[in-house]
Length: 605
Image 1: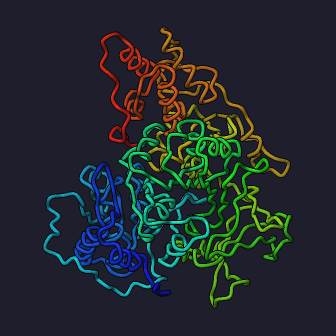
Image 2: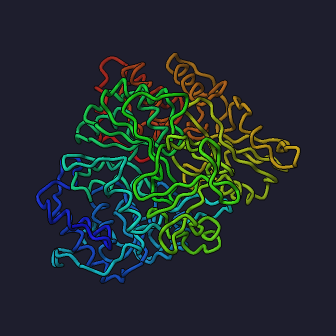
Image 3: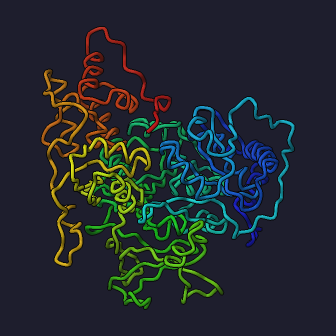
């Protein structure tokens, strides 16, 4: 019988006792049973206890996707602590900030990532020969960890230039993954662990299968192409997959039909396109498609819209509250608005975070007493999202009430980026907005005013040193002055609507294409980035390229030339000339066959 005062790891331990010989993890042909996973986590947990980890101790985790990563997460919870993800793709300056903000005194990492975190605080290398655990007990620790103790802290962008860490409890995780009304988990299911650990989608990916007696299929490290992702899904017999809205749209335009093992597909993090919803049902008849909505502060999902047939209408709703969640649509005086009228969405229930770590002022502003809750001390989270509830109870998303945006599934406060830009001594003013070159694509664009000629490449490098990659704008545009509204505020709508087709400043002078392949690759890049022209020596990432565009380019080249590239090829050969040379060599007589596009070719984003 399930205890009402249970922790995440206690729920896992019950599953391990019930299904000891069932496969809990699989990765590249390797399988780990529930009993083995539990035993390894118990040994590591005891080692962590010896390192000083106790109830409410924050532990940093900086790892690539691996079996060791999953063992580490369970072990941290068993030791009483909570994990704080340090994304390997983020710069060291960001790691320094989060380590200090969260009060981390121990970081778990891997040998290949040691240099990224060495010197920040004490470090434990999980795959080191020096880490000897075999002599430690494999039995459960049975520590008094309660539902309201922290399970993890997830950092999101902050409008003041300082990230904020939402403290998520064991109770909140259990509310998401057990007995949910949007997801049916069976013992024969397999979930793909694909999202970065720092992205709260990983909460669902990891804990739903492990607490439901299913299998967690760990995707190899790196950013796969669309074809490689589809191949991984089929090879691992994945039945449940979560994708960001941007990647979902790309897969719907690409190899969605190959993923025949899927029975449930979740997408979210941004607005879904009805066109791509319909394409998915055409590609995978019988699929159950879920549009998931929710801020990190309410533990991944607040509302979900479950679809078993093509979309109806011009928009995809965010649906109904998930199990254990209350949704209120309120006016600016916290009064419920009638169905059909717009209001701000407030989320209550078991999924609400404890607040922001070390930020009592911000916590008080966003986490309010719940006047509608039935439990004493209940709180609700103010999302800042404008919605309306239909008469049938389905909620529709209308937009943001502030400047916060979502790009590639990540919630971003433009103010945090603007703060870093304004720290440059030559920048007088700056504004970051989202532009939408196509219906299904978004990009961050930074407009700036400078007293002297500040190079865009220098600003890009400034941001790369202190912000995560997803927060570095794709486009930088210099203006004489930022446009203002009649009220004297920056006219963000005008900036978002401004077309920028000029080739951006890069470290290379413009050089035109000379060969047919160079011209075709240059035209492909220009088309995807909405530019009038691209030089053959221009760097893909200086032009504003990102990991989603990498997958588009790799897929297009495979279809056009029959040349199977890997994302890593574009990271290593990031100019038109370099990429064209790879294609020419692959097409030349006697050239060796292209490398297989299996998951072993996945690369670091």
